[in-house]
Amino acid sequence: MKVAVLPGDGIGPEVTREAVKVLEALGLPGLTLFDGDVGGVAYERHGHPLPEETLTIAKACDAVLFGAVGDPDCDKLERSLRPEQAILGLRKELELFANLRPAKVFPGLEHLSPLKPDIARQIDIMIVRELTGDVYFGDKGERVASDGSREGWDMMSYSETEVRRIALVAFRTSRARGDKLRVTSVDKANVLETSQVWRDAVNEAAGPHPDIALSHMYVDNAAMQIITNPGAFGVILTGNLFGDILSDLASAAVGSIGLLPSASMGDRATEFGRFGLYEPIHGSAPDIAGQGKANPMATILSVAMMLRHSFGREDEALRIEAAVEKALADGIRGGDLDGTHGCEEIGAAVRERL
Ligand code: IPM
Ligand code: MG
Image (cartoon, rainbow, N blue to C red; front, side):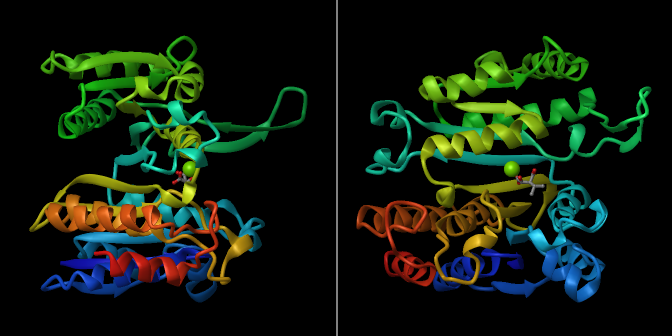
């Protein structure tokens, strides 16, 4: 079980450290960890946010545990050298086209949501976001507009092939969740050609799965419904840009970005499961970095997703999830919730409850 640990910038190192300690506390045989630099830290040390060496380590492992990247000091660098290129480069190079982002309210934490508790309680959504296409990876540039002003442009596109493979992940995910097989595909087909091809390809992919209750929704409407009627959603299938926005929206509805993990998967099989990259959905939070205030729970829960998807260790994944849930029920709360427990304290509390 080879895991590449890439802590990155800001609070990345502190939350990753606690998550690694939880992983090690399980005492799984054959676990080997490899460290690599990514993000602003990697730029400082190696002159690039995603050094060749880090990519080689990641490729040689069965899974990647990723902290966070982003450093305001790097905002002036040309785009290809900014910390964010580390995560975008890893997704592209490792062909991690499927991003799973669960947004769920933990029992007893309904009051953290800005929504009414009765509505918040309904939130149990899995966002399946396409991760290697869309306007994120299209050609982009700057030119001079007809009136002589600067004009930025970014090319948005999706091929049927890209859409079909992510749609299948959504259907598979829905089946594994065992809920009502509800999949909502989110697009902007009333305006975008990209979305029309998306919608047609999703319908086509759904053909052999007649038991799946597939519906389509425009992204603006979806943003509204996630807040007003979150219980209507099971799996949300969407593209890279809309998925980025809707997953932050869903995390805000849950009330804490510090609790939400994610998995990014491709097709590559490993000895025990599928290769994947696991990371909290929060960023590097430079404002609180190095103060021991960050909540490591999202990264710890990302380790649970890693055990489930890359190592076929469902029992251990459930153990970690139960320990986090128990810690929360016992009042262990990070600063981003309503509590004051520090990063190390939260890590220790989860380990004690394994
Ligand atoms: C995310 C982040 C990234 C994205 C950034 C850091 C490039 O916001 O994982 O959601 O936009 O995908
Ligand atoms: Mg985002």
